[in-house]
Length: 139
Image 1 (spheres, rainbow, N blue to C red):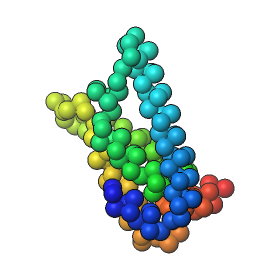
Image 2: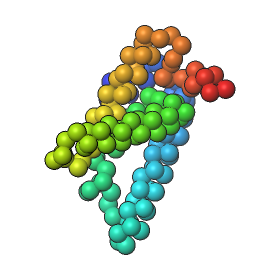
Image 3: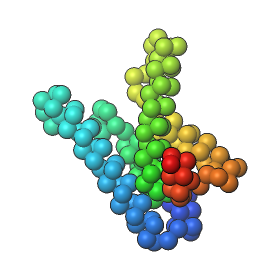
């Protein structure tokens, strides 16, 4: 993931990197705050979500892509990759009775990002480092 950050630094302006980091980092921070609040209220005590619910690798992966993806791309990647990971996990648990309850979130999201980066490379209509293709698609 350090390579993504280096690639972004080479291809983007400092302003774009700062904007991505601010918007995506804030979004991620709010998500982690809500997760902490949810599990703390549910268990009636302050919960550190990194001990049982959210791995450090998951956090590091999501932080590392904050500089690479603009906000709209980050938001869509975050939401759709979480949905895909949930569906894959449900399917995996249905096929294997005694499976590990932990979900390899960062690993599965990294595979999805790799696929998106390959599509980005092969298809000149998509640019992961720019939101314009997505806003044009949505409009």
